[in-house]
Structure formats: C-alpha cells, structure tokens
Length: 185
Figure (cartoon, rainbow, N blue to C red):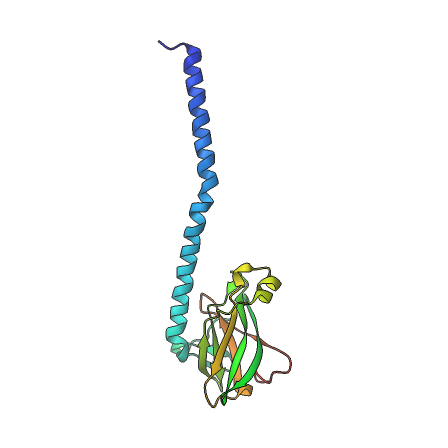
C-alpha cells in the first residue's frame, strides 16, 4: 500500500504534467487557429471577387454615387484607399495603372471598377506587387495592391472615374495623381 507521501508525490507529478500539457496546447493553439482564420478570410475574399466579377457590368454611376442592382446606391467605404498613378497610350487605347487597398483588412482591395460616362467599362483584381504601398501603409498584406488594366477602345481617359471595392462590395473612388485629367476634373 502506497504511503501518503508517495500518493502526494504522484498527484503532484500528475498536476505538473497536466500543467505542462496545457501550456504546450495554449502555445500551439495560434499556429492551428491562425491558418484556419486565414483560410476563412481567403474564402471570403474569393467569394467577394466572384461576386464583383459576375456583376460589375450592372453598376452605373449617378450624381448620388455608384448604383448597383435594383437601382440601389452602393455603400461608400472609408477603409478603401488608393491612387490612379498614370494613364499611358498603347495601341490606340490606354492603360490605366495604380493601386487600391483596404486599410481595415490591410490587404488589397477586392476589385477595381472603371466607369466611363457613367457606365462600368472595365474591372480588374489588384495583383501587381507594390512594395511602396505596403511600406507606406505598414501592411505587408497590401503588397499585391497594384493594378493595371486596358481601357476599352474609344474610352477617353478624361471621362473615366475609378472605384475600389471591398469584401462587402462597398466602394470608394480612388484619388488621381496630379496632372491626370480624370475623375471629372
């Protein structure tokens, strides 16, 4: 029959072993949960991109803002930031380039929609590396926030306005580099 001290020693060792196991579990938990949260966020972003990709032609621009399906105004997002850096002539058309980021998520915007004369004429998913933007925002997740898209033939840059889209499909107009004749200026 074990003595009282042996029984106490056994219980103490068991408690220490449980404490160590719990400490290891809690230390490893972020490694297990973090990737799962990233997978959920990635799936949410993919769904948002799919939604914009399927519906971008239905958007139009009115004096009150962007109008989506069922003639409802699209919410403005204060978390979206970006710039149209330039417009370059190419093969009788124009290439538009810039960046768009969601400063709430510290990630690229879900999409960029280009309007000309009030109608959606192009869209692009940001995927161009912009180290300057990631550094400026202090957000490594915004590294691929750059975009580049070709405007359809016949679209004049001075009639173009450019909007970024977030995961909730809220939009904000991008800023335009000085000297660009865009955005109704």
